[in-house]
Image (cartoon, rainbow, N blue to C red; front, side):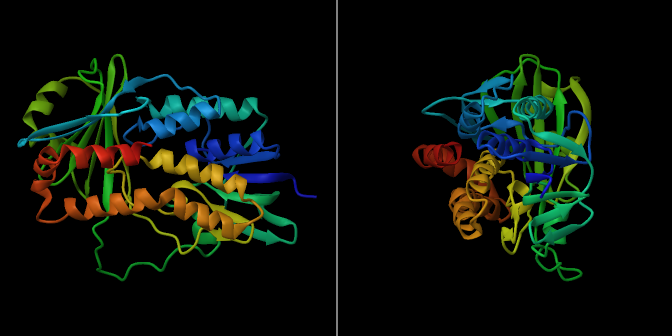
Length: 342
């Protein structure tokens, strides 16, 4: 007999959400995670309204700061859109992780400290780190070891080839938020996101090419730099490269979920909403890999299409036209924001 019904590899927010969903459906769950305690990560920390609704459905309600919409800003001006429905929320990654970890534990999910050094498919399911399970949900992030171990990693890039992949940086600043919008400041080579996450704290995240510097990006945005001057709180954290692919999302009893299944970019700020939706779909289709593939494509379609298009635009010579066009077409800007926030 397997040790558990569902083995979740990766105890970040998406892995813990998968554990919560699986327990709510009556499955025995073990979470395998190499790190102990509360885990931080470089990310924008803005939960779109759709992500917050999914958390509430799991009885998870992390503390943070309301987010009423999105503002694109550049020296050419700015355009704002406030969500038509419910608000989102800026939440420290550590606060979100703690809330999900406590909810998973309260529902009976067991967390084991360890790594997925090998994945062995067995007649009854799968075995990882000495734990046997009927199903494995790989929620182990951008650089997923499980994705590689089960043969779902695409071929490596040819030496010397560049693909324009981008990286993320994040730092917090001890400041009272001056807005309830997520501000996206467009510098010449990178985007700087400012997200209110508490009454006295804002997160500042950069998305840009390899070697991009948060301080250099801020130097090109003097108004924002002046607001943030003298108030850094903690180190700069990094993540990337952001763009990742998988050849498929299923291999026998294994399902790739969240960033492990593929990732375009953080530019549209909806990574957690998509990851949470994938977690629900994976648990609902444990015995039907084809159904999970279909659900995965449906859950990620808008994100993949819109984010890929915007990243391509941002990396082209037309980059300076993004904010001016959004200002001239506020209805189009609003429609894109609403589609991604849902």
